[in-house]
Length: 92
Image 1 (cartoon, rainbow, N blue to C red):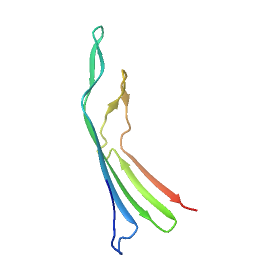
Image 2 (image 1 turned 120 degrees about the vertical axis):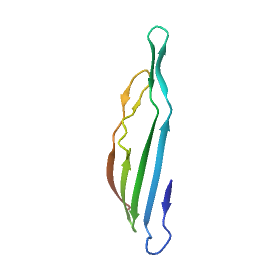
Image 3 (image 1 turned 90 degrees about the vertical axis):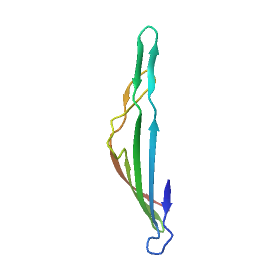
Image 4 (image 1 turned 45 degrees about the horizontal axis):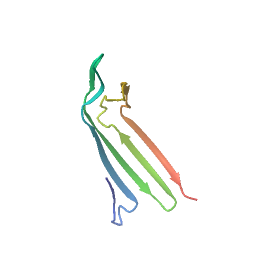
């Protein structure tokens, strides 16, 4: 979710937050080899940004809890730990 402030003092500022959840997942479930289950996880993300007349500056954090989690389809793929990014966009 994202919220842009309406007051004159905070005009141009916005904040956002989100979460991703995945339940336990059997990435491998075969009679010949058995099963392997990836554990459930929840990760949290946040954003703060400022938009001026012709530009936007955003600071974003993903996986703020630095949770180790995995994805995959018949594989086990480690996902990113905490990341922080700064973005600048300019409108011509």
